[in-house]
Length: 249
Ligand SMILES: [Zn+2]
Image 1 (tube, rainbow, N blue to C red):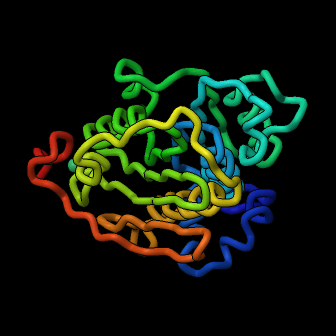
Image 2 (image 1 turned 30 degrees about the vertical axis):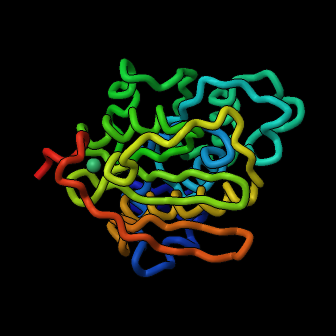
């Protein structure tokens, strides 16, 4: 016997979540019906995809045009030594299906650009930032604001990271935060465990948004210092003159 919308296997699998009174069966069904898009399947994107899938988010679109390189393996925990040279999106989809066959996974081997971003976000309830460059993040930010899709941003470097949830029209967007586009770094140095801290927060933010629980990181940039082992919260306001979200009411 299952319950409406969840099989017996799913009830068993998600038992420890369903036991959380705030989630319950109703919340678990919301997770099953949700569609999340993970953009970038690197140090952030791998653990994001794993935690969304293990929590039972029903539909995942996993986007990355890259192939696995030896130098990815210190942090990109979905890939193995023998995967070097293979497409990350295809591999990630395979591994996520092994982790949870109840999740519908759609791999996309494409680079996100102005031209394809809206199509790639189609139908999404939430988009998660697994990117390593500001140019693409700002393309995704603009599209999410236009389409009204929540966007959970994170960035990492070395022992440091930051995370903020963007709810279009309800709080600042990434462009409100960044008056100028930060300089790009061709190779971002990173300890894998730092990326996992931020990715885990992103996954939790997505789960909260989908189930309608708690307080999202809207208008609050959470900054992580792994050396001092401290989190700091910086308040961020919407800019009325923001070229991306300034026109939204
Ligand atoms: Zn803005």
